[in-house]
Length: 363
Ligand code: KG4
Ligand code: ZN
Image (cartoon, rainbow, N blue to C red; front, top):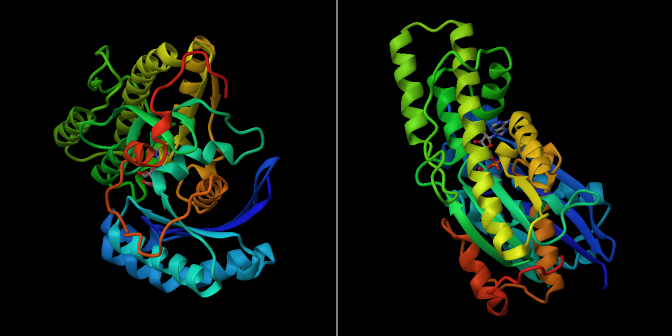
């Protein structure tokens, strides 16, 4: 194949990011990768405020793209395409990045690839050396999404299950808010849990033992809120114990649901597969270790991207764009920003011939 060099732009939540990636016959190479977070701007509100996010993207996006191009020592004319996140996400931010991508594509007469942010996460394990080969079972766990997807090829995705209420990252963030730990909550809950007693609070494990691989975290969240109410004034030890008990419940839920998802994956693709975790929550070491142990138990290889490519970044958007461009896909400049955009619906639109999985097929 001809090498493809693509600029990726990401602005769907609270990270402004730009990256340049080259895709050739040896796989993807990240040439530059710039991420500018906005945590400090959102921290006073203990959550992402969409309008603040959109304004912050406007302020720093041009500089972020310029930095990624400078790090790559490339001019726009040397690119083969511009990939920008077109959804799902906070619409103001998505529009900022998508419009910038369209402007660069138009000014330099390059193809635009409007990338589904979830496809970026789904393909992110392929960014690392020796990354995942198709097909693989993906647990996508972020602030807005929580689902199992069979990733069969670029653009060929089957959703096996998803959350019935909160996303897992949202559950971490809400607990952090309840305990006044700060923002973003996931890493703070994880580090507080390290000093806590995971058996002190008997918390529910919703859907444990049930069929399928959907998730529900509402009951767990309510039980945490009740525990906080009962305690009244909380010591640091109380907080650590609640975080540890919450994380222990999460680990049991994730293991149980993943076992069922593996059974569903096995029934189509045969045993001995690849289990991949991606999205911000996949940065959690306790979750990574539990999935790795489960993988060993079930004969699955466990793969997770390096931490910097778990949370939002533009390298994964550039990769999704380059892979789509390689297959001959690009998008019209009229492509709209989409606040909601399920990954499997997109798959159906792009590659209808791949709808049926084949037992025993090789990557
Ligand atoms: O993928 P991401 O950066 O943005 C979305 O697309 O949502 O994920 C952010 C989410 C937040 O909810 C954050 O609290 C969570 O990932 N997160 C973690 C950890 N690091 C980030 N959750 C648990 N443990 C972590 N170490
Ligand atoms: Zn994300």
